[in-house]
Length: 116
Length: 112
Image (tube, rainbow over all chains, first blue to last red; front, side, top):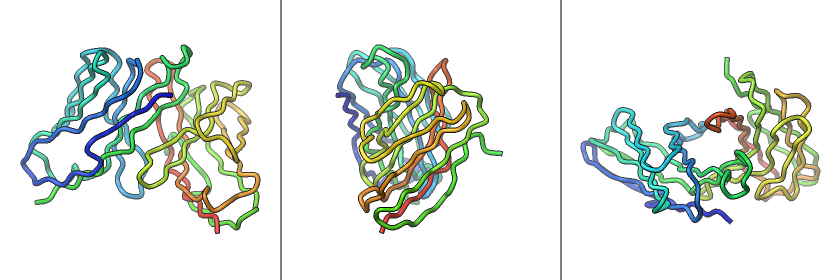
């Protein structure tokens, strides 16, 4: 059974600071996704990471994937209030079943609050 | 217009009632999914479908059934709703290149 663990689950930080959210998963996979969810809203895709060593950046967010360590990170640089949200990582079950895209296994989410 | 739509957006129903949640998409994707979200638990996969004739159970399919009426439509049914099915339900589609999933707006279901 594929397990995905995020930490921390809750993070309160000040504007201007840097921080990293970690996502560990339990079995081999080379597809990892990061999503953002605002309160009462749907999930918005942030990053798609498809290979070992993949690094993607969008504004103040940067995501990376180390498939050997089964670890992805989401780094926040110089945080601003607008980045307050819940962030989810999710892993594709592709490699579990040997098939294709059998659905995503999500972490529990990191609830991020950025205070002025 | 939204690419993935869900109806209804909110629903309150009583224990034992049958209820159907509907999902439609205009993205042209073959793959469709149903997830439920509970506070503090993330999203969990209920059912998924690769095409009209290919439907598969996910992690938590007990108490649910689905119907893929067409490439663009995927419905989730609760045959006899119970209170612990109170949750936020999301439909999603994915492409066949990067398998990135695109989520609908969600249906908030309350079973009393």
